[in-house]
Amino acid sequence: MKVVFDRDTCIGMYQCVDEWGKFTKNMDEGKADLEGGERPDEDVEVYELEVPEGEEFEAEFAARVCPVDAIEVYDDGEQVV
Image 1: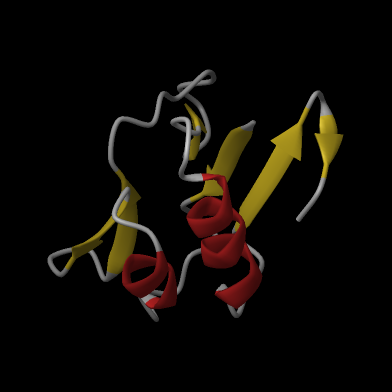
Image 2: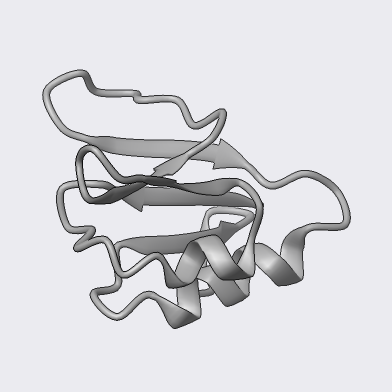
């Protein structure tokens, strides 16, 4: 399972931070950060992270509470959130 986070879309409501510890507040930029996330394309602020074993529920819930749908969750290549 992996999380894809579009940081450009993020509006800094930080609901994801409350649901999953991999998201943190970046108060200087007014957006969340995905700790450990990798940026496959340096031209866009989209980060990907493999979800650690046992944290699938929290990752999915973080995606579900995002008010602007900046977080997507994929399992075996299929989008689940």
